[in-house]
Image (cartoon, rainbow, N blue to C red; front, side, top):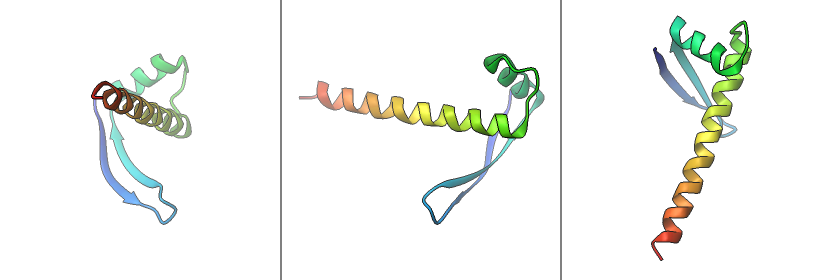
Length: 71
C-alpha cells in the first residue's frame, strides 16, 4: 500500500497545499474504512484532512499528558 506526499507548498493564509500519490491498494483501503463504494478525489481529500486533524489532536493530548506527568 502506497501513500506518499510528493510536495508541500505553504500558503499565505497559513494552510499547506500537499501533492500526494497513492496506489489502488490504498484506494481500496479508503473505501473499506469509509464504507463507500467509490473513491472520489474530493472524498479522499476530505478524509485525509480529517485523519491528519485527528492525529494532530492526539499529539496535542499526548504532549499535554506527558507534561502533566513530568510534574
